Length: 251
Image 1 (cartoon, rainbow, N blue to C red):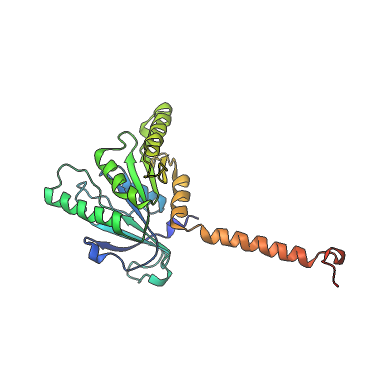
Image 2: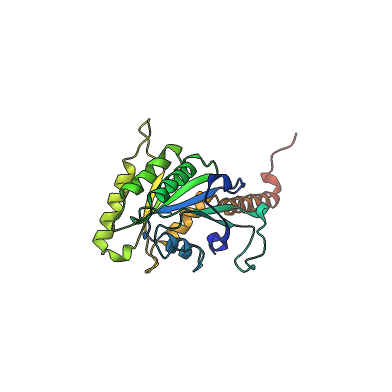
């Protein structure tokens, strides 16, 4: 079972001063309004109403945090989350790019998101949600270029791929990867940018996205440690059962 299924609402903030005082890794989800961000979060976390899409796209100007660990979805919503047991946080950033949002709201969004993605030490990676039919809008590129100088990974999820035919899907993915590969640092090294296709409707790319996000959050470390422990245990058993003449000679 995916660890993302443990996601539970933690808190919502509208100012940087109210950000969680935790030290665990955070993975932020960003994207244009109507790109399918809330739907992607809900299907990856296997919960219908975890992330809410506003009836008026672009009106939600808060960062919503969901915890992984410290609680489980079967708990009552009023039961407190055990903060000491939280493994990581998912940050659902406000959708951007909706024309009817006021100038003041847009300015607030730019300050909140710009400061968060550039300065938040706990932010381990960004998941950028883009409509596969209209990827890399000006605001998507702005988000990429805000975050790129941190040197942290960005994983791009191209949603609604069910609206494309096979050839269009292949070309879209190839062009997106080429565009991401064009970003290099001062030494000419590429940034840790990855991309995939996704469809909530056709359930395309869910396992790939889940594996990547769990990797970025470090949630695979326990499994790796357990595997190493099992190998070491097997080695110890083998040595214990080894014939006497295979042991190092004694003086």
